Length: 152
Image 1 (cartoon, rainbow, N blue to C red):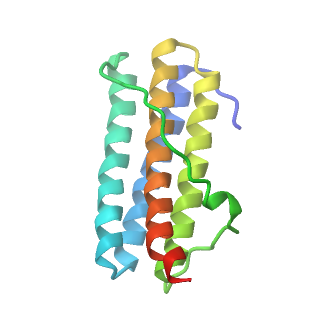
Image 2: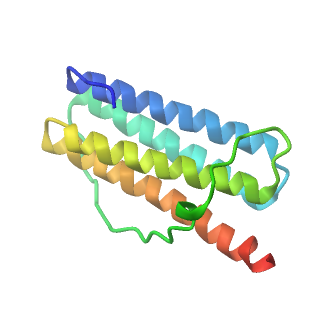
Image 3: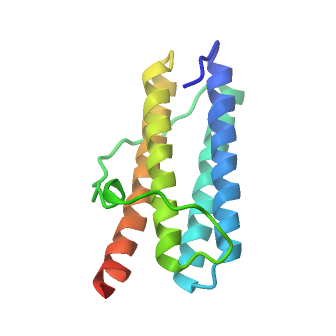
């Protein structure tokens, strides 16, 4: 992981990661015709925008309140899957695999950032964002379990 020299650098890095997630889910949203996936991607776009806005608020105001940390179940489905490349005509299950791996990586990023954060509020924010990414991964794993694994 990159070495950071300040809290602002960490926040800028995280804000950029959230924008990349927004772009990623927007791209998937535009590529799929599956109504359920479109709805899920739209929800994730809004959630990632909310994360970006929380990080921006923390950077600008120096304080963020109202964060609750709750444990999220991990089905570990993506732990046993080979990563899937993104391409234009991905089918439903391939899209889910890409999304699961991306959310797993985002969880790891925020967990790692929480470990190096230099103040408790920032640590709490990164732990919260890690849990949000874990929720996204769980949603994709449940979708995969319910709609792909059941078919096989």
